[in-house]
Length: 83
Length: 209
Image 1 (tube, rainbow over the protein chains, first blue to last red):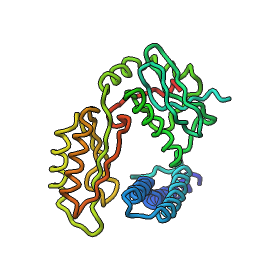
Image 2 (cartoon, rainbow over the protein chains, first blue to last red):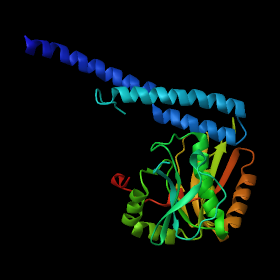
Image 3 (cartoon, rainbow over the protein chains, first blue to last red):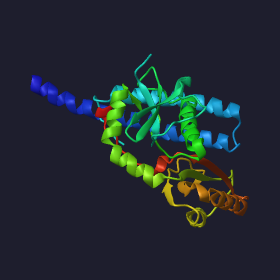
Image 4 (cartoon, rainbow over the protein chains, first blue to last red):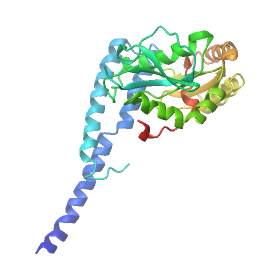
């Protein structure tokens, strides 16, 4: 019984985990967020973005980055995040 | 009192007189090993947070050293390098002394200058032609160049240059000429002088920390 259960369940689980990890990878791409943080800073330094706008956007992006890091942390060791 | 030492970079050993404070407002000190000194400050954590304020403090210390005493050379550390004790840091200086000495010699009298070109909103530029032209002009007044990441679609050019201090005025004139030439389509960001972040590559073993 144990063997049959295992065979039945495992493929499903691994596919689900695969989908989940891909979703996390796309939703929580830290490189992309870090690039946006740098772009925001650059446009502020060049005077194209106001300080208020820079601060607001930076706050949003930092929060996103934090969430993304936590998401990666939680999946580490359980599923491999494909890049 | 914490024994942790936040480390900014490595210099030739000689008295250091700079008027800035470090990360978390801590006073600047040095840890010496033979002819080398590490520029440090005390810190309560081993994982300092990379806030804008802390990153700026790190850069400020490096720039102050660069400008001190008529222009000193420093091998910069990346943000966040903390050693648990002075002895751990001395071990790193000892183990890396050949590499540190070589870098200090290679970088003597040099500063890093950065040039970024950003497409103005709505403007279209021939990126390849711009990059070729600008790179050729800047190479003529620099010692070495290093390419950096184009992290934004708006970024057309992002490079760092190692420049002899004596050539800095010529480099700046070249940047001004580039700004004039592309005034209708590009914003030019010139920055520096920085410690030569992009021109040293010394691996420090984690076991030393």
